[in-house]
Length: 97
Image (cartoon, rainbow, N blue to C red):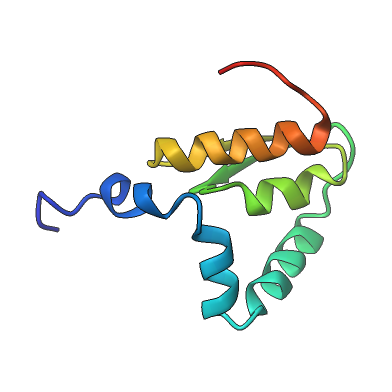
């Protein structure tokens, strides 16, 4: 991989539009595979999941509907910030950072 093309540089500018763009480009099919992924994981309250390459946290948010705990990892700090903000807003948590 060329040294000037790093995932964090590629994905950083996509933060605000990533979810909408993904939905449009997949013609909405990404919702189905995400739903099936979460169904296969069979999350239960109190379970702990690691979401690698979490991006803006779409899978993490779906997992959290079962009241389980999710740790998300991403190479993109802006995407992690977006994921954290969306999870907190959904859960009614308002903390800095």
